[in-house]
Image (tube, rainbow, N blue to C red; front, top):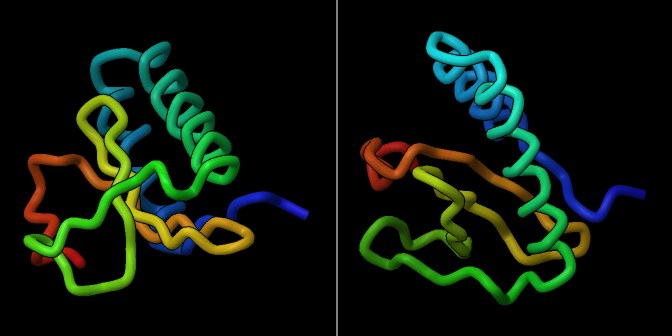
Length: 95
């Protein structure tokens, strides 16, 4: 059983990130999702690492920054990755 689950939206987010980054570099496009997945594992090990952002959402989620992205997740078992968003996007509106 996986230690984390990606929502359908999180999967789409990862594909969009790869598509966007691949315009400039295929190597970087492959590295970014790999690094994000490494952090999913890290958060599954220690789900309390993240922090709340009541300025962005009232939902019961935590945030964890990786590069210019925010992993939005629920610290459950398995960890639930809700979204993976670029920090410059309108996160409040998206969530």
